[in-house]
Amino acid sequence: MLNGREMHWLRIDRYYSADDPDNPDTYHQPMPCQQCESAPCEVVCPVAATVHNEEGLNDMVYNRCVGTRYCSNNCPYKVRRFNFLLYQDWTTESIKLQRNPDVTVRSRGVMEKCTYCVQRINHARVNSKLEDRQIRDGEVLTACQSACPTDAIVFGNINDPESRVAKSKKSALNYSLLAELNTKPRTSYLAIVRNPNTELEPAAAASGHEGEH
Image 1 (cartoon, one colour):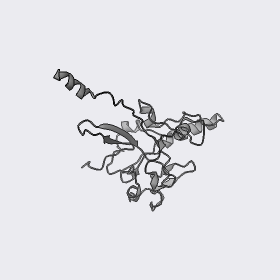
Image 2: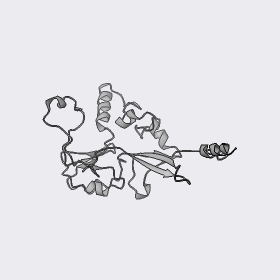
Image 3: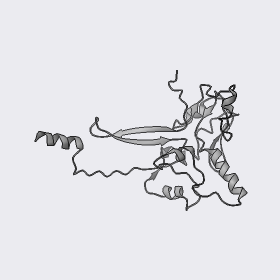
Image 4: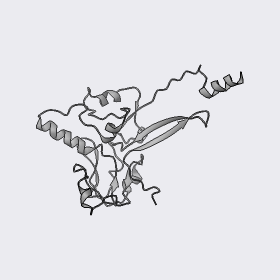
């Protein structure tokens, strides 16, 4: 029943590379919504439920969504999920208290995706306006960023050249996923650098060699 109907907003893709299929190198790549500047999902929505805001984010208007799933079909990254099941409990009174008041409560039948935690962005924007200042670099932490133990996810204002994310994007290792499709994704990645010492024998080979003596 759940085959192909899992609900998630951040997929972790795994890639394997090795000459020995029994001992491959594993590469992990987080796959949220790429927040494309030329988003192919937006042009096919018949009710304008997925729109571009003034900050360049690809937003979802859940109250408009009628669940045609055209956006999922047109997304080359396959990061949009259709809410097949009623995950929300509307009747239990005690459960109402655990809901996040900053997040829209959705029912089944709509498309779900990563929103860059827009509710956290709005919260930081309100605080900065009350204090009459700009949003500080690092003030907005997305949920995935705050939960990542290795600090592998960076979020910030790419228009600020001094921000951490802007400096990361200037790195020679920075690349966009499926850039040849010209979707202009705002989410980008840093290529992993591995420099193993080829003069050292693998542990399995070394232990086998010692065993022969």
